Image (cartoon, rainbow, N blue to C red):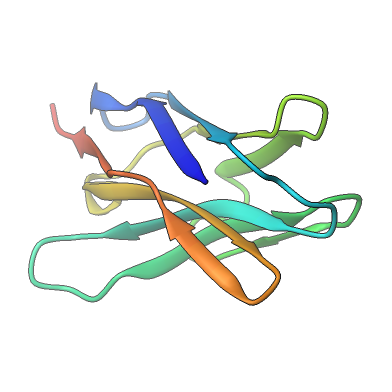
Length: 114
């Protein structure tokens, strides 16, 4: 399995950015896809995950601002980030879990600054 992420970059406070991730390879039903992030000097933390056909799990710190969605036919997961804050600055990692195994994307930088 490979995870290919795109999007991110530089955003302004109050602005929006979008991340997309495509999972390639043997993808099975019942998997969990989503996003984690890691800010400098901090541990990696969950941002949002979504199970095929179920509700999303969104971190309290981004709830109401970020939305996670997936396309099961394409095995993609997107993260729409609105009302950005400087504390959202981090490297964002795409995530896939299935059959007891986990995969991570290469990480994409999101910087929120005026």
